[in-house]
Length: 145
Image 1 (cartoon, rainbow, N blue to C red):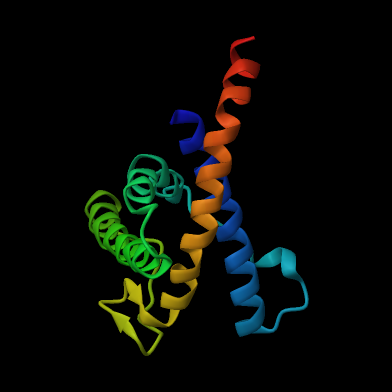
Image 2 (image 1 turned 120 degrees about the vertical axis):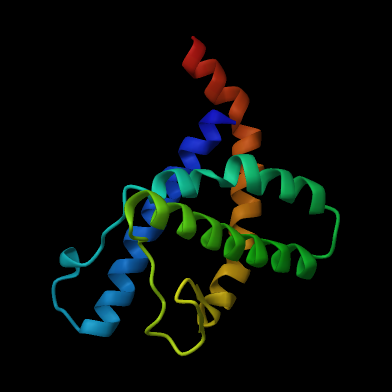
């Protein structure tokens, strides 16, 4: 699970850089894409939570129809957002995401506009999880020699 935790951190980091570049590019209309892609250091452990939190949920819901699985991921992501927001605010006085500029926000931490994105994220997560679990024996062999 430690290997998958690190891989999810890396995938989340890549997703965050691409997301910020694309959304800032569209909002600000800059010509230089290199200026806008960024990430927050404290998001690394949050992205890694897919291994200890998301994978057991996927395993438990695996046999169910796709709709309840996606809804469970959406609600789970929102719950993690709320919990980690409170934790980050307590530790640092700040939190990296603020959706108060969006019309469908809840306390500035949940953006209802992003629900379809997080809903679809579940499909990608399930495929990544299954791929990584299948790949793990080869990775373990390569690391242990």
